[in-house]
Amino acid sequence: MNYSIYIYLPLLFLLGCSPNTSIDYDLIITNVNIIDGTGAPIMTNQNVFIKHSQIHRHSINSDEKISGENVIDGTNRHH
Image 1 (tube, rainbow, N blue to C red):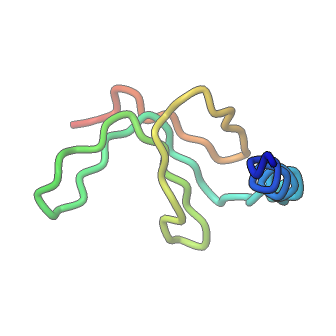
Image 2 (cartoon, rainbow, N blue to C red):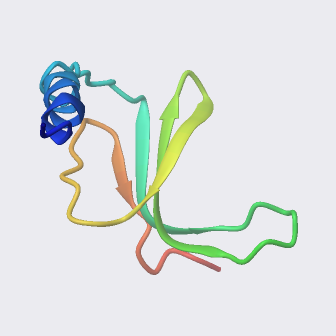
């Protein structure tokens, strides 16, 4: 008896039912380096997502399509 079908079918069902939620961020800053202040290595080429004046999340800048009314490209904007 092939038990792998019992593992894969529920997994496929769960992946197919995942919600497609979208969050409207107040501000997105793309292409920045993040220094967290703990001594950890600098996280380069990141996107920062801000909602209600707080950092909601950050992610590595990839082919992720980012759009919105308030998007700032941080490329080469350091002092």
